[in-house]
Amino acid sequence: MSNTLVKTFPRVSARTVGVLIALLGGLLMSLDPVFIRFSGVGGFDTAFLFGLFTAVSMPLFIHFRDQRGLVKVLTISGWPVLLSGVLMLGSASTLILSIMNTSIANTFVILSAAPALAAVFSRLFLGEVTKGTTWLAIVSVMAGIGIVVSGSFGSGNLTGDALAVFCVICLSLNQILLRKYQDVSRTASVGLGGMFLALVMFFFAQPSSFSAETWIIMGTMGLFTAPFGRVLSQVATRYMTAPEAGMVLMIKAVFAPVWAFVFFAEVPPAASIIGGAVILLTILIYAASTVKQA
Image 1: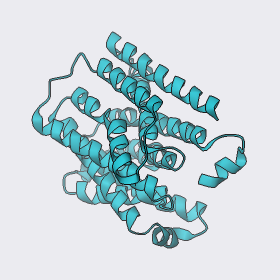
Image 2: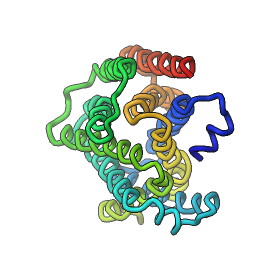
Image 3: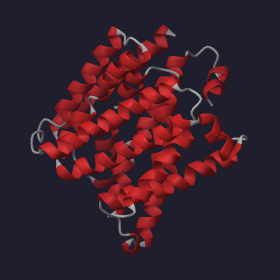
Image 4: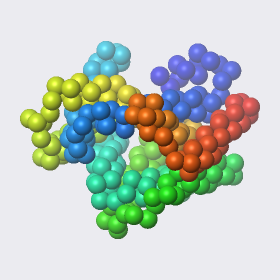
């Protein structure tokens, strides 16, 4: 997939391809709250179902789309794919626990530090220097996130905030890991992360209480939008640095309130509109400059 896109569009730079992939991945992940709201189940149940269906869909996708087969893909990916799956387990589980122990606003603000943290890790572990323009875009996106949640920030507690910090560390380390090991199958990584998540959350979830509607809704999310959004977010690191990918992925913070308005008629507050405009404008300018440079 990595080389195919560049060969198909030879006049398009790798960074441009990375921006487009990250935008699509962020758009797919922004749909997560819609499915979660429609499913009507709690955090542990959501995590279990997401992990379960992801653990089913990703191996099937490899089986039908990769001629090497699942075993060969895992063998070629080696130990980094296992570590990536563990990091996904860490980020997904602590995200849920953070939301249960602190305000969503607190969690959102802390997660917005992912691109900046990825830039630090990228420098430490890969020796990659983040360009000044990227730093400006990262700061602008973080400011936009701050505006979005300004009305409710500060209503959490230390435990939930600490879990969010651990979550963002796992996210950033996973991006750096996959940036370094380009041959790791992103699909296998997400599939293993889903399997680990389902195994852990099984002890906290109550599958017997799920309705048929819940299974269908979460099946749609777990088989399609959620895992492929995460696969694309990881594929983007093949074409651009981890800080750049993390910054572009913040587009999900713009579209999540849009879907809430479309599906649930929830009118976002003025701060969300202003902050979302800042984020969207920053990412659009950054994407346009990337294309122009190419």
